[in-house]
Amino acid sequence: MERQFVIVTGASTGIGYELARICAQQGFDLLIAADEPEIEKAAAKLRSEPGAAAVDALHVDLATEGGVAQLYAAAKGRAVDVLMANAGRGLGHAFLDQNLDRIREVIDTNVTGTTSLLHKVGNEMRRRNKGRILITGSIAGFTPGSFQAVYNASKSYLNSLSFALREELRDTEVSVTCLMPGATETAFFERADMLDTKVGSEPKDDPALVARAGFDAMMNAKGDVVTGFKNKMQSAIANVTPSELLAKQHRKVAEPGTAKHEPAK
Image (tube, rainbow, N blue to C red; front, side):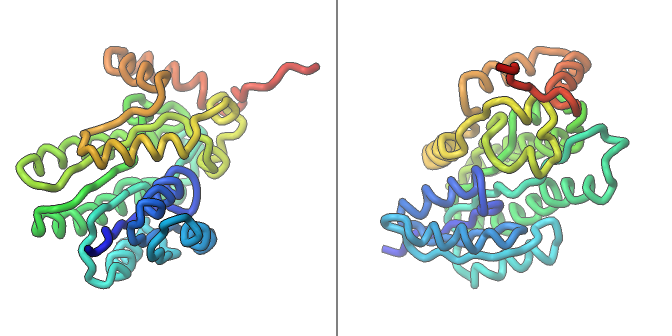
């Protein structure tokens, strides 16, 4: 029986790497991609996993249409059984203080590039009437993200797109699942220049546990999964809290200089 073929984006570190690791342990063939050369090191580690099958890696910028096309071409015509659309960028600081080029990178990666890849692979899956899609959204998508405005807006888009696409594919054998984690122990906050914020300095969720929850939800064809009890509570509260109040609350954890410091001994 032919092994399942899986594409995982943003797989060099963090949740994406852990998702790819679970797939490798399941014996799935993998094509992993990221916009940094560490993707090759990630591939080498994945190939050493017990039961691992083939692992191909691609260093590519998925914020560009050319990068998305390059990833799609790297599948070499093979049917994609599972797409894990995990690639994403973060960006801290006040919106008007952010560099416009970095704002565009967040939008082009999280929104434009992910949308293009979903459209390409999703059409293929619908033609075959078979496939699974996991989109990494976030509980950040429920909250107007003061001092993280563009990132939160991009995750709101992905959360919404995921549920809409799932409904449109309801009468097919293609499932769509949205993984909505909270703050997770990855390189995200360093890359987003948010280490001096409360959310950036506090303890965070284990990416391996987050990935496992997402993988299991996808395999069970669930619509979404919010990881962790605290995150479930936050997302439930956000649904009934006025947006203005949510924005004020978000400022308390994301504004530069709010980092949580351990008391001096």
